[in-house]
Length: 323
Image (cartoon, rainbow, N blue to C red):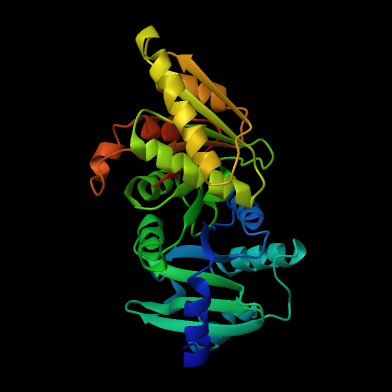
């Protein structure tokens, strides 16, 4: 386990730092999400957790491995076990991008899991300035359940998860299927960025409806976008001519609220039509389509009937749901 002094330092430092969870499954899409996370934390005020979830056992008990040795060495990369290759690649990417260095302090945590010989394993890296990077290899009955459990206990400001369905991605033991991604995006109570071929330099397309939640979400998105130096474009859709002025007004309100926080927007616009079709069409050229979850708090079933949910399902590019 972590030493008490080291553990308490982590907790006190984390209180004031932006917390990012990046779900890794070894696919290119998941690593594009990691690169975006690095941009969010480029001012050295963010901590990263890289998470790989694998199903229980996977035949490890019959594979001839000495589990004690495996646990001691797995995140030192001495033994190649399901998930270690992906986490090692993520760690190496962080070093290559200058987000961490090889000389950071290291601590290893192991937790026994009933029915699985390997259990949960975490390597925590920390530098003298208080920055923290955690690599977690967790076991769970399902990938989405493991991610959601980590979201609940981790108190993350944002969770980044890929939406990928390729033969290459499916080879990984911890493959995050589209169904698993939708389960996380639907059930998690925090902000989720669903990465589909995430391109970094095309801005945030923040879509606001006529609710107060959307205004608050626009502020939060502007704060997140500022972390990665991304421009924000405000957009609203009127169902008909009678709603045009209301759509313009909500964009103006969102702009004023963002500017009141000392931030700015790069552009704004409104349209008339079907919200889902308009948002997907206009949002295609941006890095992210951003929407608020305006469903009733705590009742996830309402989210599945929302515009945000439909856009999340149908958009070709990355989508962030702000909560």
